[in-house]
Image (cartoon, rainbow, N blue to C red; front, side, top):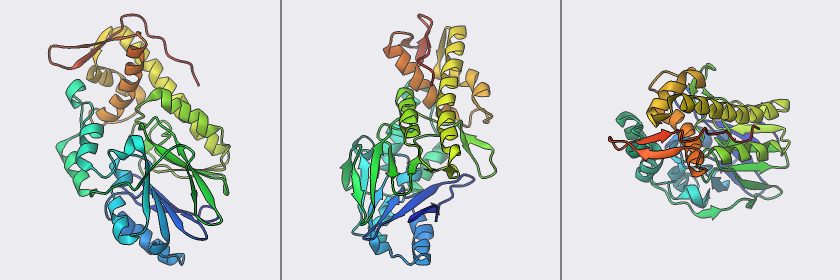
Length: 327
């Protein structure tokens, strides 16, 4: 138990940490995220037996966002706790439970315009990790769930995805954030950098950093990092904002030097400076960050977006793009 009535459920994903959380109320239980298919039955059900609670007491399942390592096991709830209601934000719910659409709109988002996507093996694995399910209730920022003697609040915290949700448990001063903030990169179990902090919407992400930092939480619980307590909470939030500003600055310099480049050319040019990840293995994650900044600059008229002869987007520094305000 992390705090009174608040439990961490380990659901490892290969060499990386993947975590769901259980919140206890007097009348019902809430599960925050589901891991991939089969993990709730493998990890959650035995844990409930250990603490003397029953799957039938699960009344609410909150899916933080549209990535399959967070919703892939949601269909298992229909067997484990048939009465439970699955909640998600409207902006991500259109993908949750639909593997083909998640692949098309999320994991293959950059294929047509940028020539960057995931391998066939990775995409096939997503079908193995998920099953169709329907979200029962669309929730907005500030939605309150009453568990009996304990209420928790759902927060809309976009940036990593458009409809990302976090959970605020005031009774323990705990923030459950899934992938809302990702520091300067996701580690493996050995602590080595495994993947970049692939935020998609940088302005929203920085706003989320500011908002979550203002809660003064005693406990910060994410999906792929060990729990942060006390002063560690503020340091992690600050690191997330600082890295975003660093990416922006590095991208500004690279684009000013190259003048024109495709997204993949920028990924290759910047990856050594952004993190010690194997070249070619994290193209999507790096592209996610860069495209977000470039789209913002294009909307502001600071860069020009055009299409090359191969059909891929070319970014041109028509005027020196200036980065936004630093955190």
